[in-house]
Image (tube, rainbow, N blue to C red; front, side):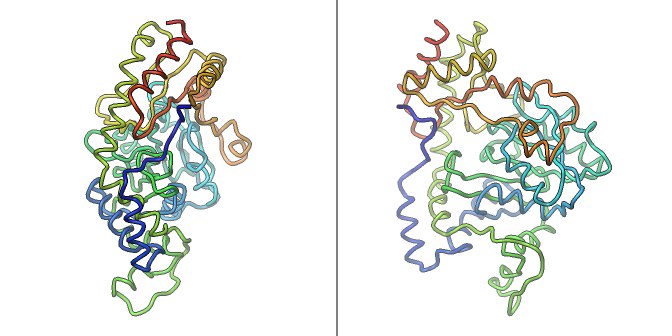
Amino acid sequence: MIPFNIPPYVGKEEEYIKEAIASKKICGDGAFTKKCNAFLEEYTGTTKALLTTSCTHATEMAAILADIQPGDEVIMPSYTFVSTADAFVLRGAKAVFVDIRPDTMNIDENLIEDAITEKTKAIVPVHYAGVACEMDKIMEIAKRHNLLVIEDAAQGVDSKYKGKSLGTMGDYGCFSFHETKNLSMGEGGALLIRDQKNVERAEIVREKGTNRAKFFRGQIDKYTWVDAGSSYLPSELNAAYLYAQLENIHEIQNNRMNSWNYYYELLSPLAQQGKIELPVIPEGCEHNAHMFYIKAKDLEERTALSAFLKENDITASFHYIPLHSAPAGEKFGRFHGEDVYTTKESERLLRMPMYYGLKKEEIEYVCDKVKAFYNC
């Protein structure tokens, strides 16, 4: 069986976890957490990076820092994971869904402005598959309407838009280090903060609403409860696991990019024959090979292809059910405009196995079976 995903492992994770245990500090914000934060700051160029327990929690932190209130509206795509909406729904906001672009599966930047009302507080672009949304246009709209931008870059670690790291252009950016991501700590994430003026409050929110971070820096003689917050600090054991992979980010990324390019090369003849569609990487976007997907003709064909691959010991996976069609989506959100592409394109997409260490012969086998399905 060729699995859909195998969590990344480079070999130093156990050594660093043992170091964390030996330090006798395995709760949050120890040495490895600080190393991870510093690495992300230097690597992405963000003002501040704070490791969190998940990307979901990073997004929840961003919602708190954005002062999202009951009755506010937040614009986002419907084709995304539930966490994108949940973070704002928990604050009492309504998710306003707009249609996606069929080429990248990202929010259609040309439909955002029409969805803005006097209740709109923020725009949440989701960088699907590590391919950037059209951030220049989104940031221009946000500036003109005085809106915040919170980048859902869960899949976007090491991706860029016109030379800028995803997650660093909006007011806040949210990374995921879940086991299915390019770099993993099992469960984990990070919040990127663009403006220095928001850093202190972010530290407070992350530390259960206390100014504990300032206390440990020696800036105050005791800490206390000063704001709303929660416990968003990951264990040092998770941070130690992640740091081993951050140190090897180029090796991991090069390996994944080679796999992505090989898939593209082998399946291009099928695309040229019009049997399938392949991912599109717009000019100015540098992706991170987070996933390789193909698009079948329709839902019926995708279902048959998925079953055929499974019969041949290959685990391929479809992705999100659009949020606006889910029970909670109907309760907590609304779709603005016409659903031209969101549902239709989501029903065509099928993700191929993709992970660090995937072998060339495994990619060849997968592609051979895809071609066999289409009698090619």
